[in-house]
Length: 173
Image (cartoon, rainbow, N blue to C red; front, top):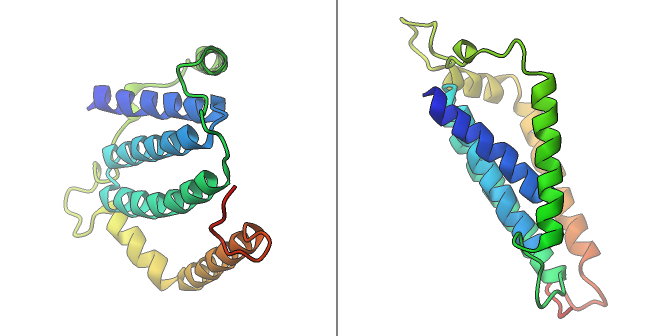
């Protein structure tokens, strides 16, 4: 289990470096989807299976919208990919920085601390993430409604900004 968690965390850091180093929106959106998958894999490893499923579906819905807008506004016939030398150089610089920071903070991190949310509750009726979902809908209902309104307002603002010369949201660039 520790090996799988290590692979998820390594994929998360590698995906973040790929997103940060890539100038093309096509590959950056693909890298963000990979980062979301790796982050949800880390959550599953720690016992939050329902939370990771919900976050992955919500994040993929948001990424679909972001990818559609970035693909509509990008006018690159030949986008620069991860295999080009400038992008690989920047990505290697990010990975060297991550390795230097990991070497600086390496002491004190132990693999025995990687336990799941349900490790210490042998006779619990609920899982750790399901109890949090019930609490989110009971006490945090107002925040959920406010978040939905903010997302709807953001959608209308982005549609208005990308409308361009009264031709609608989808336009020829």
